[in-house]
Length: 383
Image (cartoon, rainbow, N blue to C red; front, side):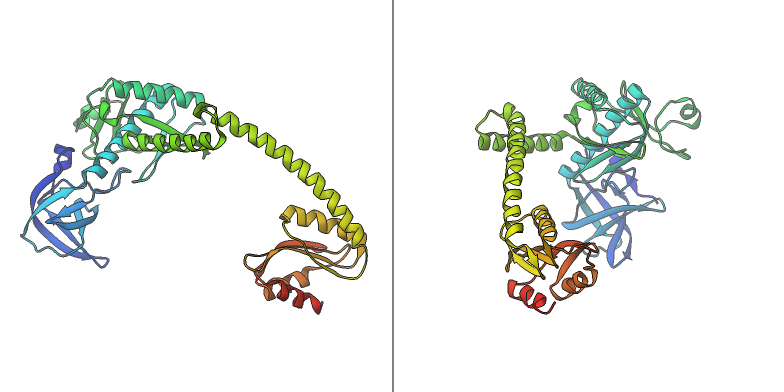
């Protein structure tokens, strides 16, 4: 006898009693099949429920060959009566995300004709892949419409239409379906074939926030959040904004403009610093002009600074110039150059001996080593 799926009769039911109909070992774990269950198995893009059976943890729930198998932390005997309790906070969160995805996908389909070609729902993130390259303004309009639909608190309709009714019905589906088809309808927003659990009315979704958008296989991938997830994310972002505004001594609504001002000031300061650094590098280049190989240690240089200084040195000196910047604890960045030289063998050996990495052109290379100053000096002493 196939397991009775209580989650379809009432997705808000959290507790139930059942009898263990079958047990099995699977990949080193214990699994049980029950006469009935509230535990939703992974499917339709929605993750499985978790919870307990007689206080034994249910860690996964999967469907195999039409049967629902519960992975449990300890064995349970066939014929034993069990008391099941699902993790309602997890289930309701997944219901909010899944229902919200239907609403926004249906509205975007009506607005633009785009199709939802991928749905990724995890306990942490929700992504929908859309077939058209939608712009930010279109997504914001859809977000506004979706939230109005939620606040109007429309009841959700779920049915299993017969083949004739199904054939005459318009609904979203990513593939051709056979057998019994479950249709989940959000009247005025969406109608879609779906096997997942959903809230009873749109108001229970709470809110929808579209968070990020990126180009994806000719369309876009949109990250979204609904309900408490959306609230938590908005709260986290607001806390970040408040922290930034306090650091910059501005009102929260002025934080972005203050950051842009700092970016401009920082860019100008970097330009001035680079000019001063170039002047100092020119002095050093004159100071170290001459012949023969040169090994220098200079504090506080960035990789770009090492590149520029080494370039000037190689113009003023005949021989190899190696410049290092860093410390014994964190390691050293380096740049090595020699006009018209071939440093490939040297750099390869140096990276091997001094636990380094890097490379470049035959006459110039950059990278880093995890070695002490004395070890670097010893390496170059014989070169």
